[in-house]
Image (spheres, helix red, strand yellow):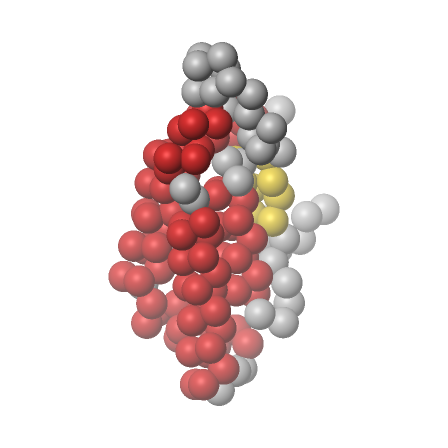
Length: 137
């Protein structure tokens, strides 16, 4: 296993991506970059897809809305209660474990939206993510 993949696998095994504050921090960082680079992202979407200005704005908006929805869905209090349920001698039937490592392959119709919506969902779920670009063979 190559070094980058080994690091991702070890991060998944030790569960560092599953902590609620880590998830929130990663999603905030993603949001900051997407806002800061919004104009360049929209230009790239237009160049790569041939969409008109309205379609480009719509794809960018839908991607940002998906990211926002995943951030809003994270409930710190509920997640911390589930995380520490065992320590408090309580059951946690709603507690879910992450898959571990998620591989995202962008769609061809709306590639930016397909990446950001899947990426934000994977991060919110506590997973480590690999983004496949180009030819996988």
